[in-house]
Image 1 (tube, rainbow, N blue to C red):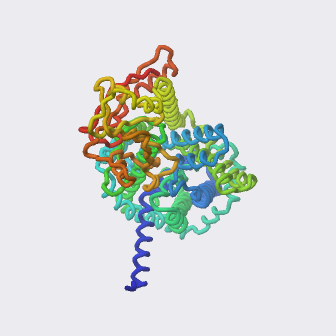
Image 2: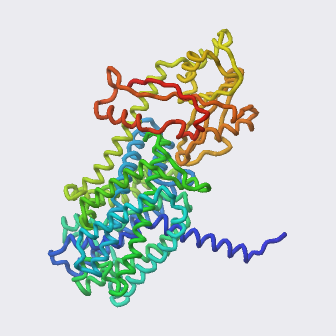
Image 3: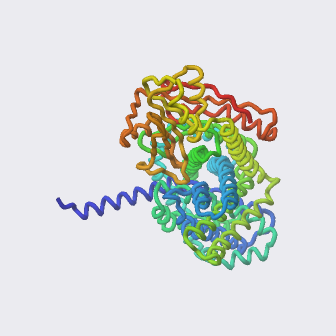
Amino acid sequence: MSSDPHRDTGANAQLRLGALIGVLGVVYGDIGTSPLYALQTCLAYFTGKGLSSSDIMGLLSLIAWALIITVTLKYVTFVMRADNHGEGGILALMALAQRVAKSDRTRVFLGLVGITGAGLFFGDGMITPAISVLSAVSGLQVVWPTLSNDLVEGISLVVIVVLFLSQKYGTGNMGRAFGPVMAVWFITIGLLGLVQVVQHPFIFKALLPSYGILFMLHHKFAAFVSLGAVVLAVTGAEALYADMSHFGRKPIQVAWTYFVLPSLLLNYFGQGALVLADPSTADNPFYKLAPHALQIPLTVLSTLATIIASQAVISGAFSMARQCVQLGLFPRMEIRHTSETEEGQIYVPQTNALLALGVIMLVLTFQTSGALAWAYGIAVTGTFLCTNILAVVVFRRQFNWSRPAALAVFGLFGIVDLAFFASNTLKFLDGGWVPLAIGLAVIFTMTTWRRGRGLIMDRWVQDSLPLSSFLARLPQSRIVRVPGTAVFMTGNLDFVPNALLHNLKHNKVLHEQVFFVTVRNLDVPYANPADRVKAEEAAPGIYKVELYYGFMESPNVPQALESLSAQGIDFKPMQASYFLGRETVVPASVPKLRFVRRWLFLFMARNAISATEFFRIPSDRVVELGVRIAV
């Protein structure tokens, strides 16, 4: 039976259009709302310093070329080629770089770079909702100039609280509306800018890099400081790479090149043309692009767009938190799946609560988007630098680039990133310390957890009985084998789990079927379902089972064990009992961790969710046996 080629072509076109609209809602929310505050912040720095028309052209040139170099060339053209089995983001790139590294020392260094980038991402994740919502709601002050900052702050807090409270219901229904809303947003800001550009077409001269260069040479140090505001135009560039797995490389590239970038440039250039024609509009050029009658609708649309931008960052933080748990950087957290069909739609209550608390504190502390803008750049530019370092290794080793080619391409990007980062460090006392402090706190937490778990495993191996010795003595022992199936979770299949030894001590029996199960986390996003389970019979009725999961997956042990029957192993799920060791971590007489790290590790260990919940094991089939561990 032949198919209609015209119908197939139409269906494919609809799928492509749907993907492009979806990209707008998920990927481009953050960078798409930057026109709300980027140029305004640049102009605010030169308020009272006699900014000339050539200076405004110079700022526009810097913004345009930041978008071209950082986003179009670095991310869209190069970095997005370095996908980890279709997955992007700083941790996926770290895993890819570590895989191709040649020495353990290099792998450790790359791990630290990746952890640093992840920590700064969480700092960025707190600032984005705060500055975006504050910027959108401040549009009301254009309509009603007498509106106080306190009222704007109060409305912003209400929007933010509602946004975070709604996370537990999932983003499936809301997500379907994100794309069309952002499509309307980009069309609107593009048309608003086009009206001014048509009246002042000479503004396109700002595309010449000479204007930016002359601006830097004329203002010298002041121009260098202004780069900290210029970088606000490219915040969200990392999302293009991080969200690549949702849509693939092509739709993201097409949407950026033919729709998002032109809309952004038109709006920025329109704002610049407006300020050139009427310098009094420099205090809020974005909202003053619109006629007075459209101010309130534009404020509503801006608020919706910033909510979408914030939602994308929050969802990214949930995904990042799950990756950190799977990679052993965070303790086990509660991860709720908010969709029965989409694995990626998750809700992490602990992460949501911490983000909400951080965002509310930022709004209360900084109060206006202008004040908060100076705290924004360090986290963003720090992540840019970390991505650049990891990308050099991947392109040099995996793509077999020559050393001069890799250094030339990413050296250029590195110079731009470093200039942005250095400029932002000058704002340290004006709020730049906030994202840096958040990032360092997250990094400290990650390294503490990894170090503490390593010490626990070392202590456990030291005190444990080798499995081979136990199995060798088992035939001569008087241990009674009873009907049933026992599953013992363990972190190392070479040693006997403490839960088994405690069970023998108290119950004096061993089940006819025993499964020692360990979960291994891979450096790829998703494990091959065909290779998920590997099992071998270590002794009659005793099996060693390895379950493999990628860093974007949540383990489901009972579901995975059901596939053992396909390997000829008679596993009866309904008859299985799961034996787990309930760890109680206490300080040792000679502490291996310093005081602060020891306190933090103990706090995280005591508040981590149970293995029963994390591995999705039915609670009525679990037997927990206490294990006391000193660190």
